[in-house]
Image 1 (cartoon, each protein chain N blue to C red):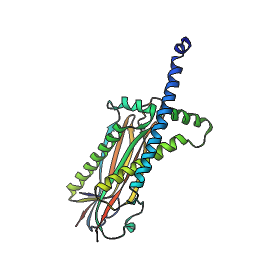
Image 2: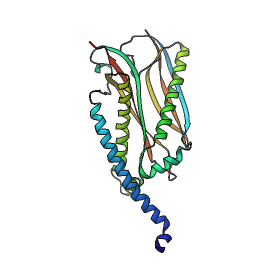
Image 3: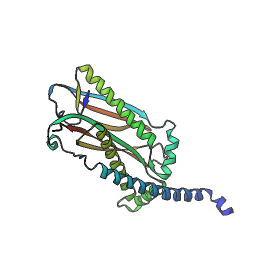
Length: 158
Length: 104
């Protein structure tokens, strides 16, 4: 017990690590399940990076739609990323973070487009930026924002 | 006001071009949400406060751009692009620009 008290910072570090790993991976799994489920739901609403040539039929209305999300990395994955900095190579923990953010942003954009009765989204653009350097003091980028935007086009129904 | 991010407005015909219009907002990122954000940094996941903050700012910037276009006599903005840059520690600028046009 005394040893634990002597190394309180070390104990705290391990608690945070376990919390990060446990809750973090649970949340990620849950998020991925929800993403794949919703992606299937919205599969009939095509999103393309191309332009007008992708519109089949007569366009009726068009409007800009955006979707954005800010996601943060957990304590455990941040440690993995720091360790990766020593040896180099793929930082898998960040890959999944950014992948989640982008897919979520596209899904939110699709949700908005569906509300407006769109049939296709053209000229999709994706942007990612680092947010919240102030939130963690070690100047490690912990969270990213992904923005997806495009033009939602609804067609004249025959 | 119609907004698109392609050169044209599908389904409409552009009759007049007015040139570039822009709008921007600068937002500080810590507004009491910072505490929640630092907690979320332990377990990971979405920072809802920040998502909302940035979404609102972007809407505000788009609104400012639209206002500028309206003053020119335009009724649509095409070829819109979004950009984010950090101007200072803890502050972000959200920038929107596009071409003001008049459609039929």
